[in-house]
Length: 113
Length: 113
DNA sequence: CGCAGTGTATTATGGCACTGATGCACCTGA
DNA sequence: TCAGGTGCATCAGTGCCATAATACACTGCG
Image (cartoon, rainbow over all chains, first blue to last red; front, side, top):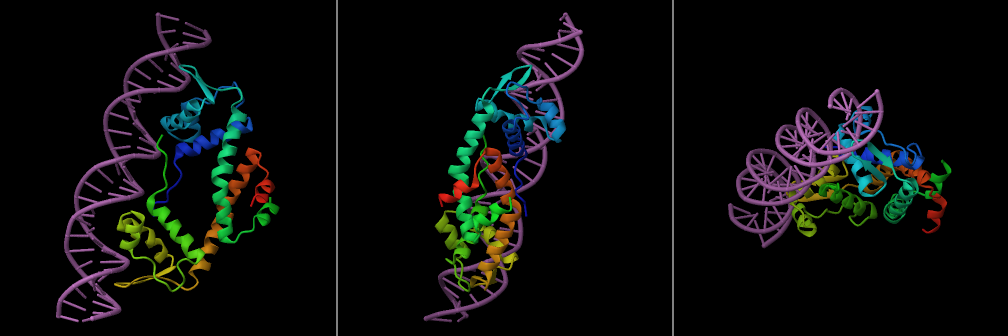
């Protein structure tokens, strides 16, 4: 058994990325503090920090020590594009071959949108 | 960093499932022995056993002690159906919402099939 | 019977990802 | 100045994963 649930910090990371893309966190605005977001999500501050970290190394957020983390200009577009490329080049091929193997007709799924 | 590589026994499990669905391991045929498959894949026999185990509990393979493990009749269809249901009900909704968020037009992807 | 091949159970060990608690360095605003 | 809010570093604990070394029960075959 051992259900291999996706790590929390990755879930948070995806959630934040989605919020940036959606514009919920506008560019130039400050992200929720590590502690605040942790409390809100019922997670550990360090886990949230780990989720944030990737964004700074990718240059999507700017850190001002003692102040907070701010969304860089153009972050949404940049993020959307990188995720889009990654999706098309890596994930979609597998999804496609899998649908084929399972006998799923893609067109059927799209109609129920 | 820490990149969350999928556990070996799950990879093997998926690989075997795909082989069964594809008919590479025909129904009634014997699966590769634990030791043989382990040697072939460069894995540990116990890890392979762990991958196999789920199939027996699901009734997809039949174990004959001292002989080997055989693919049950109807295993391919059963497997395809369960994976299909799981895909449609759980994975596809997320994929769909993600494509929408990334501004990907599903129809475009289907054309390049 | 005896041998070689199956799957399985047991125990132990190392590694590493994930989470957590605590304390520190830094900045802002009153 | 100093109090409160930031992010960050360090140390530790937990659990899963993978491997290993044996040993056992069973079967098919010569």
